[in-house]
Amino acid sequence: MFFGGGDPFGGGMPGGMPGGMGGRRRGPVDNSKFYKSLGVEKTASDKEIKTAYRKLAVKCHPDKPDGDAEKFKEITKAYEILSDPQKRSAYDEGGEDAVSGEGGGGDPSDIFSQMFGGGGGGGRQQQRKRKTKDVQHTLNITLEQLYNGVTKKIAINRDVIDKHRGVKTCQECEGRGVKVKVVRMGPMIQQMQSGCDACGGEGKSFRTKKEREILEVFVEKGAPDGHKIVCAGKADEHPDADPGDVVFTIRQKDHDVLKRKGADLFVKKDITLLEALTGFTLQVDHLDGRKLLVKSKPGEVVCPMLTDPLSEEGEAGFECFENSDSPENDVARAETSDVAVCKDAASKKDFTAFVINNGTATFKKCSREEVLAAKKSRPGATLYVLKDPNADAHLRYCKAVKGEGMPMHKNPFVGGNMFIILNVVFPDNLDDAAVKALKKALPKPERELTYKEDDEDVEIHFLTEMDPVASFKDGVPSTGHDAAYGEDDEGHAHGPGGQRVQCNQQ
Image (cartoon, rainbow, N blue to C red; front, side, top):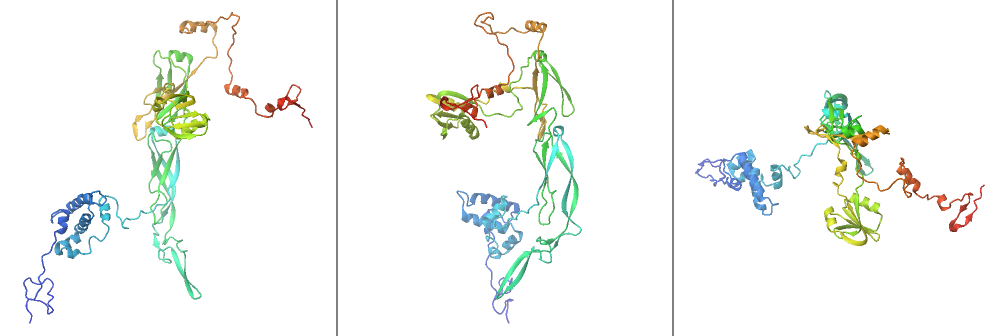
């Protein structure tokens, strides 16, 4: 007979009575180590455990200069156990032995990345699902519509999965998309893999159908030319991919009167010489239907514009300083003395200046002020410095109506400006009475003539209009056959050295 409920082999019954005869007494269970590692009480909530681990992980991470790799592994193992309700319950009941093999088996950086938004490592990160091809469309929008904003209804046709039939796994290839055939070639056996004909290599059996859908595309006020509007998930459907996007690209139509440049509007208007001198009032039809009366300031004289604000910026201008050099900040050198080539290279490479001396060009890259400060005299050298971009700003000034341009994109309550490009139309001629009246009304010229028309050595010339481009071409010597062999009045050609050569006609 045995007492104490023990088994005859002395193993003790599971959960045997304490103090029973023949039973094995278990020692005290240590279930506080992991809590101490994180510095929390046993009654700590999940949030408190997570917060404690986060603070310690930042402090002890091995990537830190003062990090502790062993301590980091210890707190990571503790967090893996205590952050899981089932593992924590087992640990509280039986200590570390009850969860042996549960914690610390993975990469500690996995938990750290998950805690701080970096995503899991070690193959745990879920691969991003692919998308079907995006569909591109061009949306032609008028300037009026870009000013006021507009909603366009666009009809699209796309392939969608037939929901009635659904998506089924291919029975022929069991969803693999390929078939494997065993081919015996004499004593050898070879496996041949080919695409499944039943599903077309998709691994799934499904049917698509064309579906027409109306998309409402909202064009915001002030949207720039080339702006893209994305309708997410409206491209073709596929069972193994998310639908792509339909992307609309705005193309701005030209306006008959107003021209757009960024958030500014430009309008060209003709005024007479009288209006330029005495004032004017113009009317402008705005893009939202408002009618604007634009007036000049009283007593203001309008001068003809010297530049066209709508023209593209030309090549960068350079100031020339002969017999000068700036010996500092050299960054490049070229064996050339061609000024045009050097200007083009400086503009493309953002060089500030260059010096040409003895067939060599030396380029500099620093501020304009630094180049001029280091400028020194050097006979035979020529210094070219990029012009101050603000030096000619006064030549670009143009009359404007403040705030009447395009609405700012994403901030439509703020507008650009409307510039009025004024073209002063001069009269073709004036009669004697008008000339006398103008001479009486307008200020007299400040210059004084010292020449007299009846002096013997004075010649009188009247101006005429000519084309300077045509005049330049007429003044360039020809490089053709006639220049090398000029003909005399009798049609004979003169060869080199003045020798007369007779040209025979056939």
